[in-house]
Structure formats: structure tokens, C-alpha cells
Image (cartoon, rainbow, N blue to C red; front, side):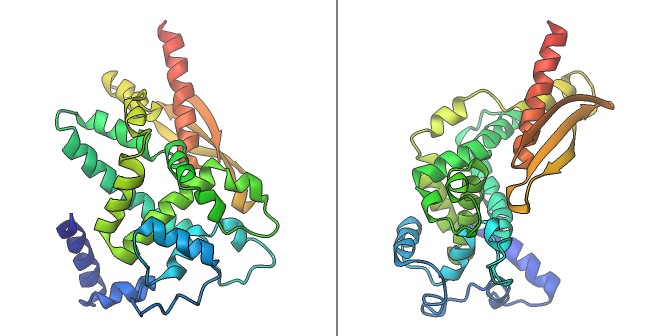
Length: 277
């Protein structure tokens, strides 16, 4: 796994014309500077202890973890400095890192499973409901950094906010400590979680089931389209429709597009079952 990520880093260096690993640290601000960031954050001492307990040892970049905990409501708060960054970019990275780690784990652990089943199991593990559950086990919501005017109670218990912060934390661990540390975190807080086997054994996710239906009936793949976006920037709600061969099969509304897609696929499958029954 280390070799795989080393190749990716090497590819990035070649594209940029810089062959030193320092270039990665400059891009992401992850210099190991003997605690240079220790006093350059708004994190409380309690949060620092919490983060160090989660990551296993002291970190050289607390600012990175501060970003991982920063909800987008901070950025859109009138009282917030314009240079504050939310965890949305780290969530994007953490989502990819988590997807790769879970994919490898499932690939190695279930050698008899076909591609469709592996994809389905991965989707069940990394969807927002599961990730929010893992985050709640860590009391992650208690440590989120929120805008002054935001609804703190609502956000700290929000499925989408918790899932985003959990993925952002994985992204921060990867940048700060590397892929093995990120995998160790995933092992401790996902794979060894008391609910992990229950999640894997749950019914296949609706998007995978809809794909299997279209493939078995020689139909075009499902097409997901955002119909509407509503709400403030930090509390958006998406309504997504899924169609096949130009026919709208279902719609779903959620705070994350991927969850809205699942709900749309669920409605589509229910409609298909009614048609076939």
C-alpha cells in the first residue's frame, strides 16, 4: 500500500517538475517543524488532547486538524476572518483515501465476492449514515468548530456534518502522518467498530441494486441529476432525480448529494418492484 501511494506522489512530482517530497509539504502545509503550529491555532487544550488521543501520538500540524474540524458555517459567518478554511477540501481528500482503504480491505477479506458485492459493501460502509455513526462513537460533534450564528445543536448532531468531519479527519491524518496511520485509524474506528459486521450484512445499497437491475435488463445506466438546491450555503439541501432511458424513476432529498441519490434510487427500486408485481 505504501508503494502504491509513493507511485502517486512520484507521478504528481513529475507533473509539477519538482522531485522532492518537500513539495508535498509545501502544498499542504504539513511541515514537521517541531510543533511550529502548536500555538498557531484556535484549538482548546481539551481539543488538542482529544486529537492526540485519536491519532495516537502528538502531531506536528494542529492547524491541519483545526481545518478538519471547521464546519463550513464558520466561513459564511460575518464575524469570521476571510482566510478561514472549512473542512470541505479535506473531506474531498478523506473521502478518496477512505474509499481506497475500504476497497483494499474488502478485496483482501472477501476473496469470493464479485465486484458488484464489493461495491455494495463499500457503499454501505462509507455512506453518511454509517460515517456519522462512527463519528458519534468518537464524540466528534462535540469538537466541531462552528460559526457563531449557526444552529450549534443541530449541526453537532447532523448526519452530514458528522460524516464530513469524519472524512476530513481521515484526510488530515493521511497528510500529517501518511497512509499507514490513516489505515490504522480506519481499522480502529471503522473495521473494529462494534457495528461493522452489522453494516456489512445489511441489505445492499439501492444505487447498486438499481445498476444491477438495468444491467440485467440491458438498459442504459441510471442517470442522476440535481433538480434543486435549497438553503443557506452551509445548510444546503439537494433534491436529486434518477432516470433511465429518459424516464424519471425516483427523486430524493438530503443534505449530501450522494445521500439524495440513494433515496432517489430507493424510490426507483420501489417503483420497479410495484411495476413487476
